[in-house]
Length: 361
Image (cartoon, rainbow, N blue to C red; front, side, top):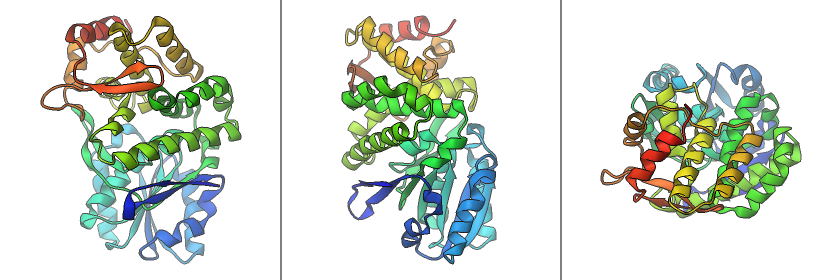
């Protein structure tokens, strides 16, 4: 097991990465305010891992309330959030009852938002079971739900007590979900860690083949990058916005196609290629740079061409993005491969050319 720390003063917490962590009550019980938890999972992950985690905790004398939600991005909404509240209230969960998110990014975001809201704040723990959640969404305290007009527009910054990334859960991850997670892994190399990007170019085939050693390294390095950024900018006032490379375009794809049609990581990959195209038109990247980025996504079995939603639809969806400031869209663009920046000064004519010429026809 490897352990990292997200340094946030008295709210600092560990990220444990390793095999078999769902069997380790000693990593969970010290973080419980009382020996009572609610495990929130979904209809896909629950049959695989709920009994295992429940058994681990009950053997340690912990009372467990299971809450099983429908699976999918389409259910990341108020209605599903209320199912969590319904169960907590019906079972008289208290302010010291800890919520445990057992699943991917959707479960993590829903559970975290429920924890931030229930009785104005109860403790929660992240037990991510997808690559995307282990390398990105479980770390940093972003929680929330979607709205038909925009992704993740309603939520809260609320940090977990601990993150348990059990790498054995990746053994049951569908190929498409594995690739979606690799999009977020690649992102770290593109925005701030060129040596890691070069390592990914050398080792992508091992990652796609689920080589345990390669996956463990990719998860650890991704979490190190995420932890450093979050510690420096918890609430996205500055450099944390760089973690949204490809997300402004990608969220528009997810919303425009209907939540769940494109996986989040697929939207991020295609959105990153739109950011690369715009960066090239602005003179920051060469065509060879753009091809290099596309090749890595292709090797990870990810899309490199975004769907043609129409320029107006893209602009409308991006207009309700969280990075909009003073009515101006802000984009994460490339200064060069391995270094990105946030700007509100993307030329409108070049942006519209990207949205009309660099999308699927």
